Length: 485
Image 1: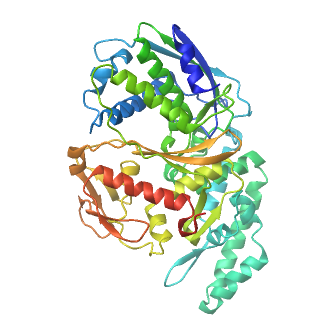
Image 2 (image 1 turned 90 degrees about the horizontal axis):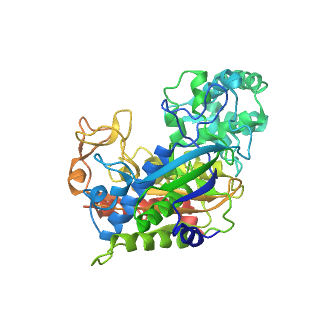
Image 3 (image 1 turned 180 degrees about the vertical axis):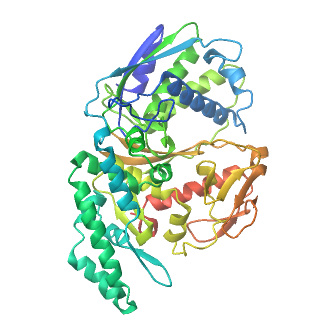
């Protein structure tokens, strides 16, 4: 069923319902931020979560149509039917859990959590060869032969004597191999024991630890139970019925809301790391789907609503489509073509493409080069680590990325990736933006030039400049760098 058909069916109807199923991993959360409960029940997306993200998309569409630079006054002027501080919403949304296609939804049960935790810590603390110049981990050498299926466990356990000989030949002259080899074999033996207690599904879970955002979320997690609660739900394991009820909203507004809700679920995502490809839900009864057609439909419906009176639409949304994405393994300076095409592999490719260090290495710069001219702040704030990075003065909490990176998946495989930017200047907020590099004592105004994939520096004086340059980096990395086909 095409989205045009869905919208047509809304006319003269006070209630519509849809069945959605997750096409990428659902990394959601209850009030504690957990995806799973004690009994293995997955926390499905709530009505508030869906309405909140849909409202956010509607705001962005309206701002783009009108060419505005902020959300100021948008809710009061255009979104009153969704409720204000003084009035209730005229649209109700109900969510009902259905039985998913992939059971169980989790990768490992609560009973397996201790073995998962032990294995994760073994991988996190994998032995490293250290010399005066750098540290070399056998895990990085394993990455060189990972291929497209990306299975950390399998490749570590298949780390052969020949592979160890490569390390020995490279480092034996430094007199450090013997000590490393002893530690490596001890770790490998411990890992073999831990793996005996894990299912194949549980082993698959460790692929998520190639996703930077996932690693970051687990840095301070020291409880096996937390690993269990926080794990994503498998693709095609979360199915929900969403009912949308019109209790007096304007018909055109109702159409705009429902179309936005469908687009949000399919392409913008909900839950954690939605701008990085998690949390996509597709309609179970839609046989064909075309992003550009559905996006144009959304803009058309939004324009009709916003421009009922004299109005001249003024917007340019530079959508970028990447047909044959690649993964950049920046630690070994290598691009890999994606042939397996499963959702987790796409999430790994997306995660690596957002990193400042990957941008540096992709154009053959040293990862220790100053990062001030590699601006990643448009991909979400705060964006910091070890007391360095980006922040906005006098502001706490998180800011969503200006760019949503959206893989097109059916739950089994993926093909394209779309880069979806919503740009608004926020001039006053931009002035408050600060950056603290590794060599800086205090945060300072961000550097007013930016390095691009062509290795040149360009002046950047507005949010739009920064977003366009971030888009160029994402396209460059995800397309395979200089060797893009």
